[in-house]
Image 1: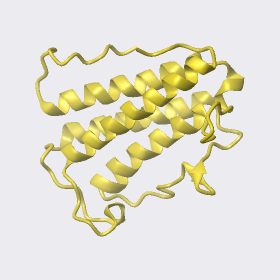
Image 2: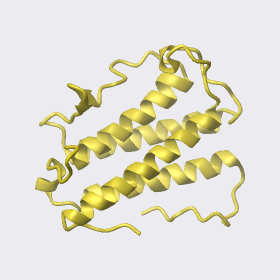
Image 3: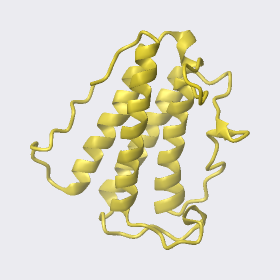
Length: 168
């Protein structure tokens, strides 16, 4: 697993710091989901009803919405593809391996975008911004880091309830 990006570790740029945190949180999500027994992946232990696989696909789509649909301004088919009937959704035929591969591929895309752009660069206008001015890449990355960190905490609780690994 990727080591926690200690604040005192030297980094060549702020972009590198953002990517380290995103990689850490993404791989921590994968580790928690990978350690759960198969029946726990599609079971919810919370009143809100989400499952670990639904959380995994949600984060992949969040990253896609903010980087591809938002910052890059790309035409993205089904930007809200992680939702059905106003809740997170994973199709019955989607496997843990498929969802982990999709999340990692999305992370590789994010890394490629971040390394090719300046953090101060403003995103392309488009529907992701819902009429507001587009955000800078730095603001998008800050949002993604908080999204991953928050949801990793949620998954830590669910994994502990399921008898899986615990976080800090």
